[in-house]
Length: 237
Image (cartoon, rainbow, N blue to C red; front, side, top):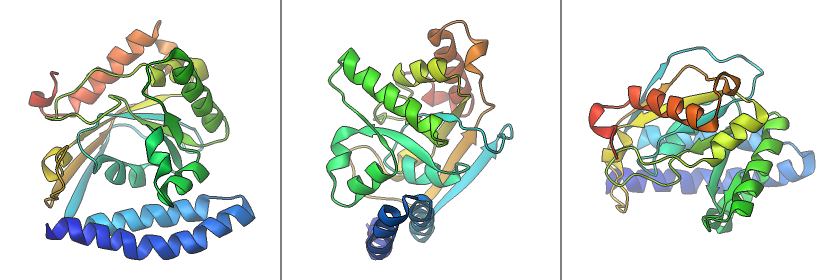
């Protein structure tokens, strides 16, 4: 339990003063970049102190100044803190609407333009999320989605949600598939015990939505790319 306690204590000790200073500054200045950088720094420190190492592979360079849609598989609650600090600049994330109700953290995510997603299955809800994400991209911020919509219980890839692919075809923003593995054994779904280890993250070559005739073709290409960065046992549902 020690690594988990270290992680939580680090976040608790560092996040409170950062929020007390960063949130008022963001409200006064209208600029969240300082608070975001502090948050990513706190995340890095917490992971390092908890004994979590990260190995990163980048299969193609990303163009500075361009905004991307990052689409990743999802095997652990460690995935967001592992992935987000590795991205080139600020990103907004598709998240469950219920997470927006968490005190302080939820407010910070709203300030950061995180995109709430309702899991009610309604087409209207999905369209609202895609519209919000398109506005975020237009404002100059990346968008990130854990494209399965939930964590895989055993690490194997689940089916992908269609919303991010509607977004990609609608906006034309390049899509970067991301593969994450190793975190599934460090913090398993439904468990609280954290184990030190190494997270493996692969950023694949960006895909241009215009190169694919349909959303389904783009989805299939993203899935193939993500699979190529995972151990074979994780490929099947």
